[in-house]
Image 1 (tube, rainbow, N blue to C red):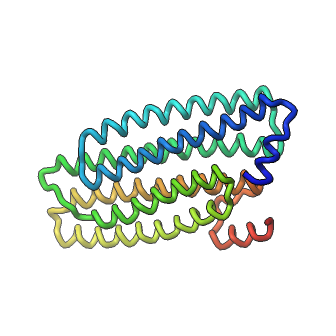
Image 2 (cartoon, rainbow, N blue to C red):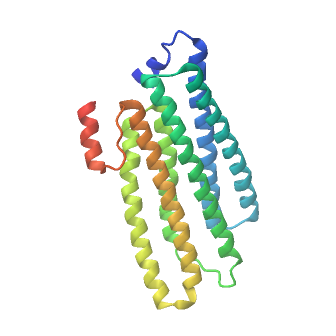
Image 3 (tube, rainbow, N blue to C red):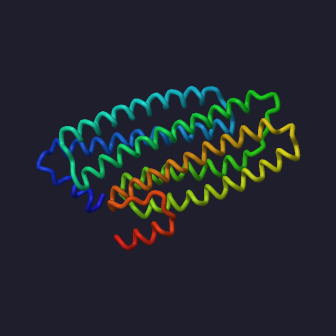
Length: 242
């Protein structure tokens, strides 16, 4: 973790060091499960299988359990250690990242549910499959990169995740326009198109949560809040504080 990791190992109490390491380790375990939820949901979109839904539900239970465990550890560290400076940033960043990982998992559940709805529809259609695949691959990669950026405390990788979100948003808006046109031209496909729109929206939200994780990493490493700013502004500010 570079200089910041060195800060985390300078405590007089080795127990405090262990608690911070445990916090980071637990977060990455939870992140791995959230990644699995997304991958399973995308598999369900490609070829629906009820077994995938069962796996996603089981993974969701594990994600929720990790969220509770990490929340308890965060509360305990704040109460017992009263962290300051970089330690406090770490604890706060983890607390915020946990929320985004849990919500990304919720969106993945929606994707799987919509896959089930589509498979059970009497007018099953492959409309929107290309768009779903395109956005799905990108947001899955963003979430993976965001977690890697956390593990490495890599600001450059975190900022690249934010840049990728702009591309996802562009693809999403383009897909909505195409699907709206398709729906008008063939009203029989309205139900299927609306299903795909909900899937795309859920995937786009996963990209947003991955971006939020990236923003929390920049805050953790640099102590700078970059939320609600354009990528260009963030790049300029990050260069100025390097």
